[in-house]
Image (cartoon, rainbow, N blue to C red; front, side):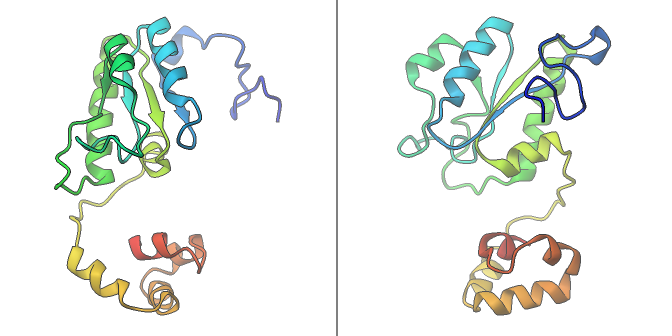
Length: 180
């Protein structure tokens, strides 16, 4: 694919048309690749809200191993959706999606292009792909019970209960199998 073309064929070297609306910039990738620094520079340049999309950075006190922006970086520009969840609370992707969509809508009303930055693919997909996430609360007892089953039994059960999901998940992907 041409590096100067977006997936929809638009030339990325040219600004989007004025009818396109404020849009959303997504900076995604693995931990410690410089996403936060690039997002900070871009947010300052555009005057854009900077929204976290990392499932561990939402938690207060989770400062080791999460590559959170430094206090100095946070002092340079506001970082949102970061350090606001109590570590004892299980924060779901549905909760993230609601919070991020609300903040993105607010930015759009103000004519701003928000920047979503992080490495949690499911968080990013919940926004960019508009995933319909069912309002199901975490079920720790069921999860604990399923974790005692051998992986191949869990996958076989998934195939019976939800063959569509099973076809999209590799039989060795224990995390997604358990989540499904």
